[in-house]
Amino acid sequence: MLNGKVAVVTGASRGAGKAIATRLMSEGVKLAIIGSSEQIHETATELKESGGEVLSLQADVANEQQVKEAFQQAIDQYGKIDILVNNAGIGFFKTAEETTVEEWDKVFNVNTKGVFLTTREVLPSMKENRSGTIITISSDVGRRAIANGSAYTATKYAVQGFINSVAQEVQEYGIRMGTVNPGAIDTYFAGSNQGETHKEDWLKVDDIAEAVCYMASAAKHMVVDEILLHPLSQEYPRA
Image (cartoon, rainbow, N blue to C red; front, side, top):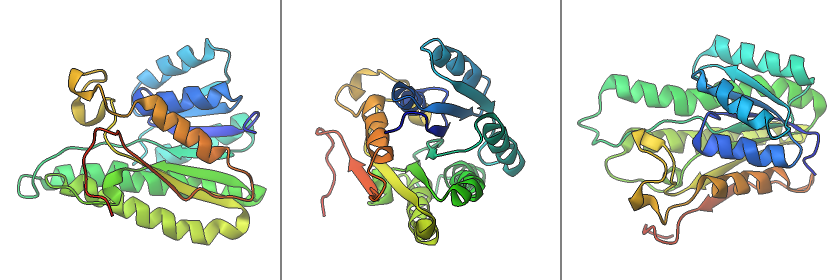
């Protein structure tokens, strides 16, 4: 169902983004992967060794001009974009009192402004084709607040509101929008390392990739609005 589709995946240098790109490629998807560092080109080389078609683009998702240029290169290369996966994100965990204005601005620029810029950039092409799927990797804290993470949590509530609103604007064009909202993931998030002992029972990056693939593969007449998943070991208040 995904064979021959074109996907843009942000934050794809490593971790969940790389896993998502790898999973989509296994389904025959042509990729444009975006990362903020030169590591994105190394990731593209690895993916190409598996026989996939991959365009690597170094860009800051919070920079409007860089986003425009990256998406134009993807359109020039493939002629269309069928799937956008907004995966780029950062986080830190401090009390509100400890959080600086610079930290607040940085996390909002990447997590919220970045989703806005990339989504806005892909919409004209999807509208013209009257189809498309936009999947944003958010967080379970976009549905429940946590202590010592007010800035990060606020970005995820903002993202959820943004996606829900835009989904109503573009539904008539056959464009589907949804969020994957994971709990604790064994990845490089917040300056940690993947594979640390205490993360043994956490979600794996392949779990997130599988959720994205499921959402993207949904029948054309169906939209999966949200997938909420968490490790069995994670405790949190249930509705």
